[in-house]
Every structure is written in C-alpha cells, then in structure tokens.
Image 1 (tube, rainbow, N blue to C red):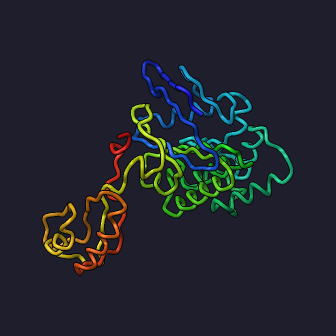
Image 2 (cartoon, helix red, strand yellow):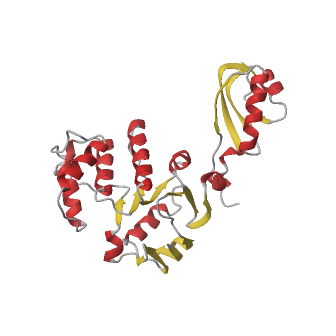
Image 3 (tube, rainbow, N blue to C red):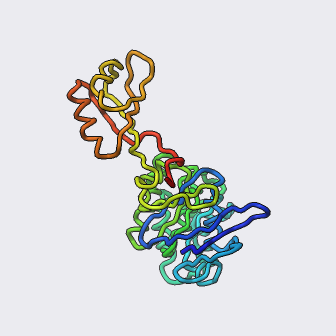
Length: 294
C-alpha cells in the first residue's frame, strides 16, 4: 500500500504523492515511459530507497523492515548473479541470504531450473550462460520459496520470444497461486497480455490505474491485416462508416481503423466480409501512454 508516497533523489522529485493499494493474487503492471519512476518505486518497496515523505507498507509492515523484506522476491533490472557459482549454488546461496532454510531445498531448486528451461545446467557456472539464460535463472532465484510478494523489474528483458512466453506463463501461475505480482515495463503490449491491473506513471505521478483497456483505451483504433491485399478503393467502400488510415497506394494488406470501442469491432468485421475483404487479424492499434489519465 502506498500512502502519499514521495521520493526525492538529489534535487529531483522522482515520485510524488502516490496513493495505491496493490491487490493480492493479481499481476499489477507499473507502466510508463523511461524515466517515469518505475524502478524507483520498486526499489522503494524493497527498502533500498527511503521515502522523502509518506508511507509504504508490505502486507501491513513498513517497507524496509526485516519482516517486509522477508515477504518479497525481488528481480532487479540488473539481476546481480554470482558469475563463478553454479546455477544451483546461486539459488541456494540467495535462499540462505533471505533467511530461508529447510528440507527439500535442492528439489525445489531443481524444479525451478527445469521450469525455466535450465534443466541440465544445475552445475554449470553462470559466466557460461547467455543473457537470456541468466535472466531465467534470476527469475528462478526470485521465485524460490514462493514469496507472497514478487517485485519484477522488466522481467522479460533480454529474452527471446520463447523465453518471454515462459516468463509470462510463470507470472500468471504465481498470481493464481496467491502471490501479489508487481512488475514494471515500458512495453504496453506486454502489459496488456499479463496484467490484471495497470498502474500508469507519468513524471513520477499516478496518471491512471485500473484495467488495461480502461487506462490505455487500446481499442480507440484497431489494426487490420488482410489475407490478400486489397485495393484501397475497395477497403474504403466496405468500411465507409468508419474512419480509416490508409497509405496512398493502390493496394494494402494492413491498415488502421478508428472505432468507438470493442462494440464496434463485430460490425466492422462483418462489413469487411460483406465487402469481399478477407481479414486475418484484428488487434489493438496504436497504444500510447498519452491515452491514460484522461
């Protein structure tokens, strides 16, 4: 929970008067352009940065307290793995640093390594890993012990599409199992895929919060892809009731349509089919941070 939280670094007001309650068992995406204060917010929640004013709590415990820290699994933007240690030793050493101990730790660590596509690399020194492998190991280390709060700073950074899909599934799984996941990204399309709620930061302030579609309104326009490119005149005739963004070419296979919202999409698709067009995909068009907070 954030209560009038403000953070000043040097002479810069990085976060200003933030108020928000992060719901449990959900994925909340802190979204915003570079420099919006996303990483600073996570570092404040983990207790690395002290608020200039206001308060923040982790499961009713003040941020920075030993109890609050024990509830958190934190993935930094730069993971900080121990390059000379093996993948297994990285996980177990980090667990001991968090004060975790118990039977079955190696079994859990092995399970996480397999889950993140690192099975068979348990004894491999991390300096031999690719960037993507290191990111997946850092995520395995972060989720070890199933902490109830996960703070993830750009968790898909450095990952190929398959690695990103694996991480997205793992984030959704953690929320389903009861964790409160708070992750940052500047990628609006990733946020739409993974989020239950969006917390939009602009200039260190809360511009808007809520469901992704309500905050960023991705269906103000939609992008249509056709199976077979069509004459622009044919497209204009079929979609005469809609505002179009078409290139000044004779044939196009992809274009934008301005709509009032999701409710317009079925009638738009029907109009295209009735007009002899063959739409393959209809997806959110130009998603902009400028749409939030209105």
